[in-house]
Amino acid sequence: MITKEELAERLNNREYRCEIAGPDATDANENRLVIIYGASDDLTYFEGFFHEEAGAFDGAVHRVTIAGNVYEDGDEDDEYLQKGWTAPAIVMTVNAEWCPKGFEGSWRITPSIPFASFDILEDGELYCRGAVVEFPKATG
Image (cartoon, rainbow, N blue to C red; front, side, top):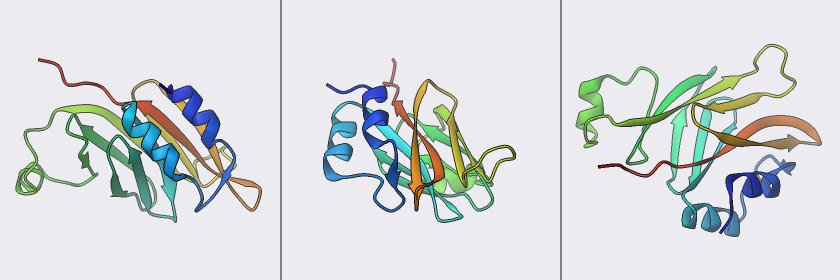
């Protein structure tokens, strides 16, 4: 058993493009944890309990369903349903900020549910402040 805090500590200060090793994704999956981080100048990655990549050019707010699908800014409800997803059951939003004011890195990830932060470095400098969340269980 690993907590979101323990996983975030393990991930902290890794280099860009070497963020996640095999055991990290396995441990995250087995413990309902999702690792969320920004990459390049236009992507948000969700790794672990589910895997998704979402567009985030110049930042984005993502809505995540209980099924682990990421609903991106600008998606319309009919497009959402055309993708074969069930009716939206949003369990969290994720604010992926690109170069926020007063922040020394390129990405800052802030989920709407409790999370543990970790830093990704590029050439020793802060690149992204990512987040690890425990993914909610379906109710009902």
